[in-house]
Image (cartoon, rainbow, N blue to C red):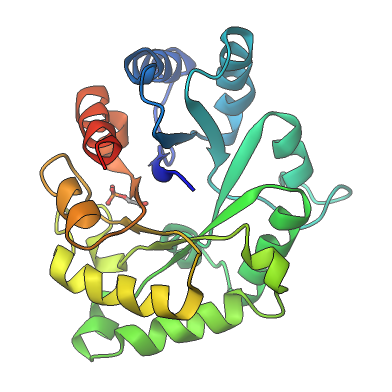
Length: 246
Ligand code: PGA
């Protein structure tokens, strides 16, 4: 599998015009990058519009993902979006269990349902796991990760595991400008690799063009999940180029 760079735009940008500009400037600059997969995860509302323009001109090396989804296929679930709808729009990936969603009430049980629904719809879930600052300070990082993994992946079949992507995102490093050192992140990478073998493991949390190389070269992560820096074309392209050389 190719290394991945996931752009998590979160609830940005504020206008469709800006979203189109950001998307087309990224698309233009990654045209020749073929050795990695770059996945854009915009807010739901922009997906069909950006997706349609990408469809029209060919994907040009970019894939699409969403930042969440619901676990049912259809029906009376006001405000929800199903994996099937996302698949129909050309999405290939879905971020599940991001810490910002966990903070808003997402539980390990709903994450588990979503992972299964996403795989059933033939999409790839990117499961985010990570410890808080308090848990890290108490030396509980591995215990927390183990519990999240156990609950979030409960009752998954071996076949379903083949579609999974894991993202180690220490909560204290997300959006703080305080990234986890590659040395510390590597310990988690090795722990996850030992548990999961072939499942790709990404790092996320204050990734920028200065620290990106270390996560790939030193810690050996198979990709990056980029939040804030994915909204800045120059910075994001720089990160993509760094990952692409390996
Ligand atoms: P950040 O976000 O790069 O802004 O820290 C990462 C994430 O939330 O996935």
